[in-house]
Length: 581
Image (cartoon, rainbow, N blue to C red):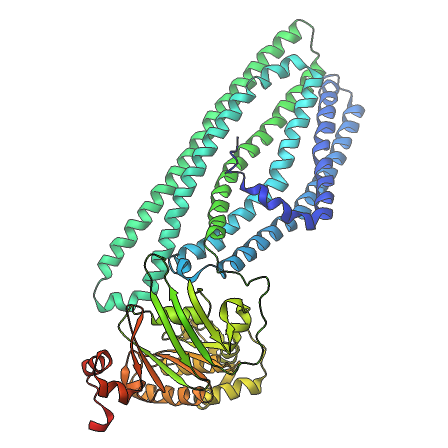
């Protein structure tokens, strides 16, 4: 019924092994629960003749036995459900945790192409659906299937000829359930794709609402949102229609089977081949069969929907991963900050190089500014220095160590980034500066002082314990940028990468951030991506990049005197040689 590509839940079985003892205890309760049905069927066969003969003591005894068996069955059902819930939920937690760990190692180029809303939906709603399906499979589908087999076996023992007439209908029911299940899975995949697209649009819309209002584009956004939710409704409706159609079709076959059995039973009683007691047990068994058939059918539909969710979760694993550390990776010790690039070439597509034959040398403690138009390769160079990507030709050396043979975590502890757009996680300011690293309060405060952030933090009512709201919306842009600088220098990095950290600030905020940057840069090797060229005139060395190649280099004064591309870029921004100002 399941093709190999659909049988994704088999891959979750190894995750159940740590919970084997609990599963065995739950299985024992399950067997007791299912076995109780056979005892109740036997009691039903004895009860109806006793009622017809008005044997009250016998009736009361049988009822008492039935109550005891029923009570034991319900206790076993409770044990089964409670014992099996833990492993199912633990598997879901492990799956979600493993996938999030995998997500953190996806290549940044691939990650940027993924929708944040879609990924959020997968790791929340899809993971929850997988958990629910796994739990239902363990605590409901398995006992229902066992109940089905046990009751059918009992009915075969009572009267194999009547049971054979029922079994003949089983292949038709199985085929129909499989047919509907495959279509439900396909419809569910389409529905979940629409939900992911809707989640992505919601994320964009919420973040971009100020822009939407600024352009008076609310009707456009409303129309687009309504179109997305209508497509989502249609996709879900198709799934519901398939499930709704399955119930009457399968139910009709069950009714035909029931009436066929009744007709055959009447004929066999007439011929003397079946007793009233046997018929009582048999009909009770037939009634008992209806419930597990309904459960297995419904759960199979949910199982198919869970398959669609698991398939979407597993797609995360197929995203290209960041290169792992080499087996003989070198540990990085104390770093001075000498940086050398030797004939470095790189392209996200090797046929279209982004960086071409770069040769650079930066002495420890120097400041190197990278200037050039958008797309020149400045940010790509930063990604190589952080080893988000690896050069396809040439070498990058830090204190003589090739970055490609270093442990990535060691390297990133010595190289810190201050991005153009600051990202912080919700939590206290102290937690934002620590950013998952172990550091004392004194170290956090010292980093904030270096970043010129201690003053404004201390002036807040709760100081370093002040909670940052989502995206740091309760502090100003300049304050947020100084927190980012403190975060960068906390680990005392030897190499500091600045992606024009002041380009989006006003003059007053920029002055405060620039002071923090100057203090943070002291004694470190610094590479600056400069969009506003007035901010890099004091750099030890300025490198002009264009189409991935170095077209000029030197100090500001030397480049201005020489003319060329740098002077042209400066004049476009109305910057003049300092000597002529």
